[in-house]
Image (cartoon, rainbow over all chains, first blue to last red):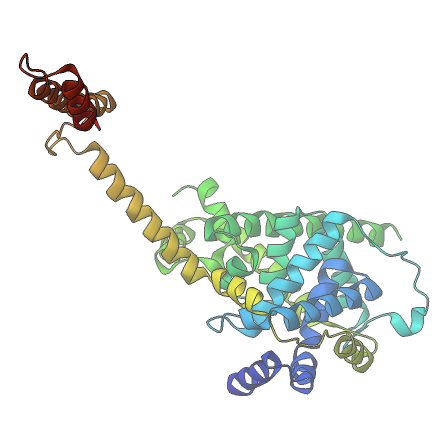
Length: 188
Length: 173
């Protein structure tokens, strides 16, 4: 979405235009859901968090600082909600009611990359909360280092330190995983 | 720069400032082990990139959008009290007020501790009492003087007792 059109939708939403806000939601829903799912890894819980995030956006749109990208501001709200959710340990029953319908779809993902995705997410779960947030925002969502610092209210040095440990642990974890995989393949 | 200190920089190679990158490059030219480590890190980053491009999408995006819009609270007009609170909560106002109060505190401290100010003696509470008592005494004294002179006017060996009595009564009235 063009920045001008986005700003116009934001201004209309601030004045109470729900139709304009619907368009804003449609434009950013995929990003918000994808970011949430990277943290939460549970479809229904992710949908609830996305819903909560957009309602928060609606309530606080007049506080939005236009010097930042809207995506960065939305990402900050989503990240905070995800971290709160992980901290509280408030998780749904992981047995989905409609497994075939509820499972999120990964677009054009082959078996090998699906396996890689799973192992990377599993390794990310072993990181500390800050390392995980920095890793997801920088390496998976590809926000700039400055944007990551803004979204997490983190000084650049602290962000870099967390990113270093996250990449180190993920790399070591992947090495172990591929070493074990090779050895099992050899034995079979 | 030794290999130990450069390891962290290799993991943050894409985030390095230009001068840091130059230092790392200089080291890499002469160190095969660090060059291999950087290659390995970059391979891992490529794998992570393939994970990054796969985005999870909600099963029913349209339903989720509808649910979000349905749950939106209507925008009610803000009351004057809320408007004042919102205005007071603005960061610019908060910062400017805190700056003004800080300046006031500094001015007060300078005035309070400035040794160059002349020492003006203040009147103490007791001195006020003394002044008050003096004025009372003065008025009492003048009244006494008046009554004495009046008595002196009336008392005379050449007047009868009835006259003196009447004179005193009139004067003291």
